[in-house]
Image (cartoon, rainbow, N blue to C red; front, top):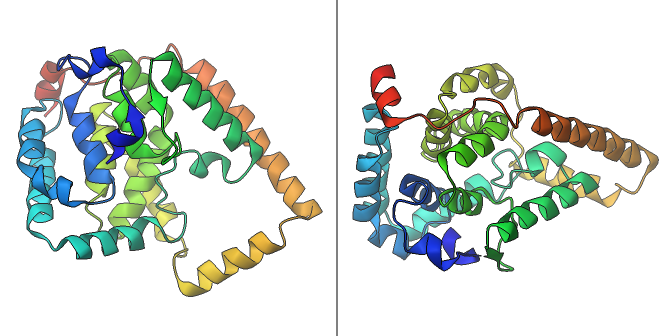
Length: 262
């Protein structure tokens, strides 16, 4: 489970009002399915039902998925998960992979995120990378609404892309990324990604995977240096954009506002 890879400070664990319980539920639903997950379905459904920031329709879809998880064959669930997330990069749950690829900027972004965790009193074990989305959601679940809104606002373009791709595949996990966007009233971002996603070639076919291995074998070239330079430039643009949006009014929907909207 994602929370096993992130050791929480004691005060975060003993204050149920601290952060958002539903974020921990979404983290578990997006993580590798286990027997423990199946056994916790009633608790997950209870937490989702209590989340007033999500629409009734979206909560119903999430709770129905939880029920399907509890009734499904575990090995089949795990096989489907591996096929969806561990082959190809299109559905990667490593956030920085969608922004930095394999450039050196990704390494620095990892260090910066680890520093964020440490500053909040968390310690990361060696099993997961810091930008693994379920792990990141575990961290956010202990933050204030203001911080949650800021962080989700900074990764909203990644969440929208992932949602469009997962929905294209008919994957239930798209409900998680859609819910995260709904928390900051940004579901409309998904539509902007649909046309681009519809024209993408799948990167999880045997042919596509072979091509990736071949590309990695010859990546020590002048052109690869140019690629890294371009990715570094994108990394700088992202950092600059991050500084600019620090004061933006991207926030978690208040339950009352959410009820009025829907």
